[in-house]
Length: 119
Image (cartoon, rainbow, N blue to C red; front, side, top):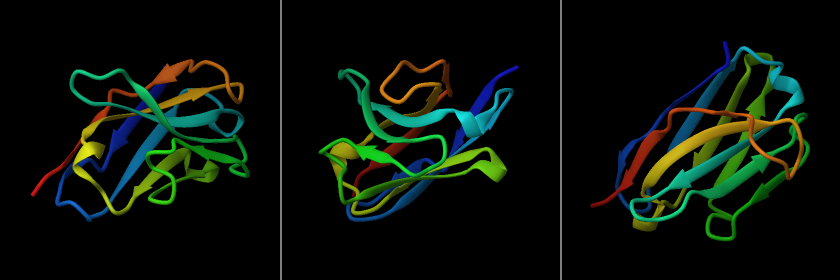
């Protein structure tokens, strides 16, 4: 069955860094667009970053541009989110997701990993 398993979340001080990983199985990972979303308490889920199936195209929300980097290793069926210069407003549950079409819907979702930015 399809699984997306996130890891790497935790508590970090403002200005710090974290690297999230998402290990995929059960579908042809290398053909899927992969995305990171986040949802803060009381807020709607938002799209943070996207990466095309081959990794050649990326896109970011304005709120994270220049601080976050999405990447993937198709040989390992894994997508990453490197988060630098973290701010308290980055605190949220981060979800990995995948879909077949750029700009389309997600077919698969992970269970989420908590990121808390606080001093």
